[in-house]
Each structure stands twice: as C-alpha cells, then as structure tokens.
Image (tube, rainbow, N blue to C red; front, top):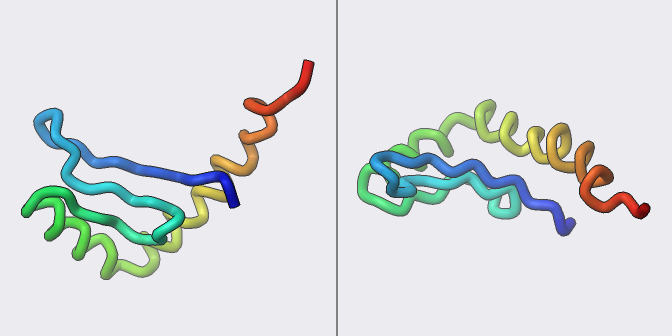
Length: 69
C-alpha cells in the first residue's frame, strides 16, 4: 500500500501531466496537460497497463531498497 508508481510527462521543463497509481488516472497541470490526461484516461487498456507497472516494476524492486545488511 505504501508503494506508489508515478509517471510524469514534461514539455519544455514544465510538468504537463502525471499518472499516479494511487489515483489510478492521469492528472493534468496545464491546459494542454488536462486535454492529454482526458485522452489517456479514456483509454482503459493503457491505464490498466500503467496500473500493472506498479506491480511489475515497483513491488518487484522494493526489496532491493529495503534490504538489511
């Protein structure tokens, strides 16, 4: 539950949109980013793939960061 997958999209050093696995959707931060977020959120297979990346990428590698010596 503590693990969070975030994918940020930038244009010209400005974050326009971000996918947050806790929310399960993209959130736009600019006018263009909001349009892109709405487009990406409407593609359910794309969003399902991003949600799955939390399990495949984050949860498999969490043991590396929290190993005890």
